[in-house]
Length: 358
Image (cartoon, rainbow, N blue to C red; front, top):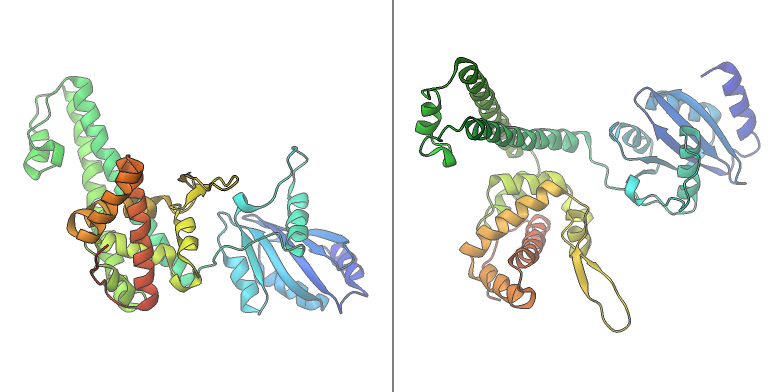
């Protein structure tokens, strides 16, 4: 910061060092837009480099007390919030979709954004999302890399099939399940030179993503054996239909299961809670909330189908829901919600699954 900016900042805090300040920060890759809110409602804003430790040193130099810091969740991660927490300060990382906004559109800039964060935080109108540790965030990065490679494998297979359809070439037998014989038969198709080169390129792409998927999965499944989540993953895999992918994804995306106090909180976090429209004496439930962990939600729904086939309790639950809703997709979502709650209880209680009757 320039010497003039530091001097104006020292003048702003003079006489208020005995009162707590609230800090709102609009975080960018190279800069931080900071709003310092005084107890009398006055605000001072400044811009500094994106260096959390440098900002903390500046605050220590000012000799002021901080009640809390607020920032938006974004691509810059949680490093700033963890730096404030390491100093014993309260940090709020607010989800952008949960930040109150004006009905009418108005001016927007970094300075106004950080002021709004500070003012909303001071009024208690911001709720923080869970801030993962560096280890938890690293595990989630590897897990999400695995999911992105799965998507890449699926897209590569779709491109191969789309090309054969476009050229009017019949698929080799067994390609629907991508058997090894069928993939090898693709290399012997009678095609024009350019088309054959294109197909060979697509097959090389598919082979690369397949090998990369095996490598990442091997690293991913070896990691839980050395951390505290190993027991939870082992217990979740005792549920029929829940394999290593679902158990590992649940453990790493939910990470600290004990932070949820009620099953409704977990269902809302996963996007499996129905939206309620209450009016009068009736409380009808609508579609599920369009928020939460999309990938984990889809995995839970897939696992719910397998759970239904392998566990009589899940089958009875599905049939009961289907008789009420008459739509299989809605019924299986309700079963997936129950499955998620069971997995959460297994993580909290550190025990294997116990079969029961409905």
